[in-house]
Amino acid sequence: MSARGERSGERAGGEPAGRKNFLGTGNDAFTCLVCGCEVLPLANGSFRSHCPECLWSQHVDEVPGDRAAQCGGLMEPIGLEGSAGSGWRLVHACVQCGAVRRNRTAEDDPRQPDNWERLVEVSRAPRRRET
Ligand SMILES: [Zn+2]
Ligand SMILES: [Zn+2]
View (cartoon, rainbow, N blue to C red):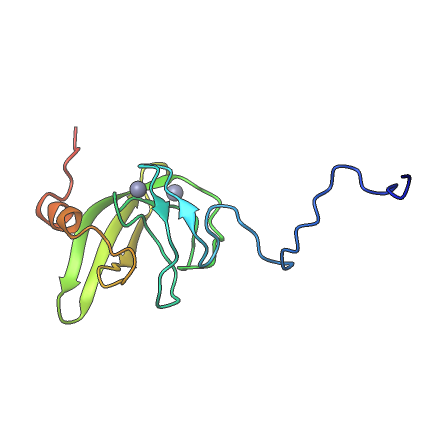
């Protein structure tokens, strides 16, 4: 009954090294900081840049997917660009530093597509909260 000596509160997890989980790095699932929605990775393997429900993003990338930005501010969806043919891009503005980014929408994701009604709302009323 004394065969256990070295384990002190550490969990043997079996997680592969190098896979970090802070705020959905790369293509991991994450929880939206704005609406609390559980956001799944995109089925097509590209990076989820914004929440499919509220469409807010977070300023974590310099280049999409690199997670190199220091800011970390929330990014408000302020507009929609593009067309049904070439694909839509959401325009996000960082509420903290003012940076503007364009991100592809994911309205065709089979599991968790972008909320189309929200996209339409954003496209109709860019700059709603202008006061
Ligand atoms: Zn959200
Ligand atoms: Zn920012």
